Every structure is written in C-alpha cells, then in structure tokens.
Length: 455
Image 1: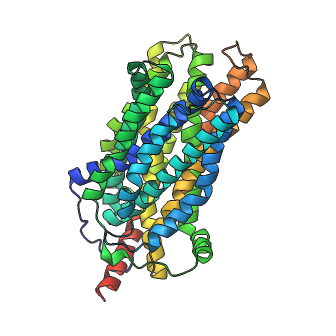
Image 2: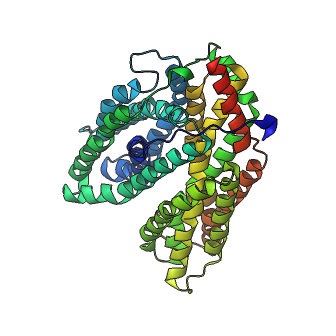
Image 3: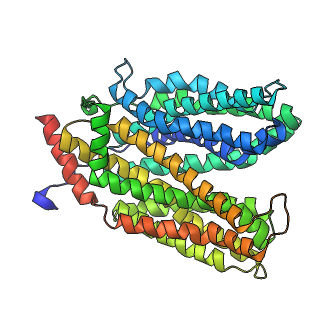
C-alpha cells in the first residue's frame, strides 16, 4: 500500500440497522416497478386515455426528474435542521409519497379526456417529486452510514435485497390486490390505497435507525454551476457514471424485452413470470457469494466478473431454441441473476468511495449532489434503453395486438432481449478496467481524511 498506509478497522453496522435502512429503497422500488409494469396499461385500459397521451403522462414525470434530482441533492447538502441534512426529508416526504402513489391508481371521476390527462399528469409529477424528496437524501446518506470500503458493499447488499423483494411484490402483489378488490377501476383504487400505506410507513423506521455524522458536514460553499463542473472534471466519478449508465441500459433493456422474447420466440408467455422470479431469486442467492468475494477483491473486479457472467448467460438465452427443454431457458434466466445483481449493487457501493475522494481533494462534502445526479442517471439509463428498443421494433415492423410477427421482427426481439444487453455490459466492463479507486487507494483516502479530522 502506498506510503505505508494501513487500513483502519471498519465500523460494522448491525444487520438489523442495514435491513431496516433497506426498507427505504424497498418502497422507492415498489413505486418504480409498479409504474414501469402496470401504469401504462392502467392509463389506457382503465383510465381510458389514448396510448399517446398515456405515454406523455410518463414523459412528463421523467422530464421533471431531469431537473429535480440534482436540485434535491444540492438542497439536502445545504439543509441545516435539528435532525440533520438528510433524515428530516424522510418525515417530510413519507405521507405525500404514500398519498400521491395511491392517487395514481384512483379514478379521476372526469369525463373530458383532456381533464383526465391533466389529472394523471399532475398526480404523477407530484409522485415523482415526492419520490425525489425521499430517494436523493436517502442515497446521499449511504456513504455516511457506512464509511468502510467493504461495509458499503454490505449495506448496499441489504439494499439490493430490498429492491428485489419490491420488484417481486410489485409484479405479483398489485394484480393480486386488484383482483381481491373486485377488479377494474375499484380494484386498482383499493390496491393503490394498500400499497400507498405500504410505501409510506417504512420511512418512519428508516428515520429511526439512520444517523448522520457531524464530522461529514463540511458542506460545499461553491455555486451549483461550479459544483457541477467539479463533478464533470472528477475522473473517477466520470468513469463511474459512464459505467453506471451503460449497465442500467442493459438492466432495463433486458427487463423490457424479455416478455417479448418469451411471447414471440419461445412461444410460452406464461414462462415469463417464472423466469423473472428465478432471475430475481438468483440475485438473492448469489449475494452472500459476492459479499465473501468482496473481502478479497476490488469492487471494479467484482463488477467486471458479474457483468461478464451475465453476458455469458445472455448469450446462452440468445442461442436457446424453443425445441430444447423448457428447463434450460429457465435455468439460464436464474443463473443470469447472479450477474444482474452486481450491475446494480457495485456502482452504488463505489459512489461513496468517489465522494470520499472528492472530499480529500476539495475539503467539502457533496454527497447530495453526487447522489442526485446518480439517481437521475439511473432513470436516464432506463429511459434510453426502453425508448431505443421501441424505435427498433417500429423500424422492423412490429405488429401490435398479439399478431403473428415476421421472422425479422422475432430475430430483432431476440437480439434486443439478449445480445443488446451484452453489448452494454461489455462496454461497462471495459470502462471499469480504467476505474482507479481500488480498495488500497480508498484506505489511503480514509486514513488521510481521518488525520485531517483529528487535526
């Protein structure tokens, strides 16, 4: 290790704290998953909007996100309240988040299509704003809770489990609740009310178990523009951002296209929920392995390993022929989950190390601004992946309404669902090779920051 620096013993957070804190990301991802999986269907089939207008509702929310995520990060960096910079927003945003989420699935009671469009646009924008108020301070607090190189990976592992459970609950829970409440508009309204309570209450627990460190409140006094320029010039953050966006495109492209793959290539659309369950199960089962490996490897090495593993499984899914045994494609989906989890886990764990490096160079903490831009990149990657797939399907002549597709369209679906993500995963792995923050380098940074605090 350079300069004879020795890593300080890591402060270990109790597992109960990590699990409780993971509830925050669990609620955020219930919102993200239900909107991604069902909201477009709800707007067109239940609320009665034309598909084009329904798409504009979603676009409005993403447009607001483009501006509010970094601004929220900046605001939380500069907040000075009794309970800290980040934690007060967990109480401020929880109830509005739950109410606005429930309203997403309620009946507008309006007859004019323009008024219906305006109602759901306003509610969705409000819900995205509430999500931002919670999510950005929440992610900004992660590097402060876990200071050590490995402990950040551990905390983010718990967070990943919360995300996986959220996706499973969203995929299965919302349709189940809709059915229990009688289906149709009433069913969605009842389901929205139950899940609205579900996404609001855990923030009381998150507030209770979290804490802030006074020693890490060296807030930036630079202007927003100057801080953004600093982020853009920060090489480690720039490489991490490119890595993260390319990995997120792979994640969301696969998520959006696999249902098409099972419907039009495999010919068994009923296998899609089972494949997703096995894939997410693979994420959870593999996390202890990644945790053990993290004790001996750099985070960039783990990311590259996971990305290449997922790529190999995706190539296998591309080569799968429907005449082959059913279990084969399901097994490949389950095995791919091991790499899929790393694509989300590692970049967030690496973000805290980048923020520490920035503090050493500038003497200031910009956790909120870093997390705000990272949260925006997370959403941007998904939007780019899904939008790009839509353009490709239109270009090759995809026919809606369950019509039989041409061989060219089916081949395009196979590419988009499998080799498309591989292309972005390999690109992300190539960027990771240049990422400079090893665990030895981070140990030096933490030691020098500790010396500065002591002085």
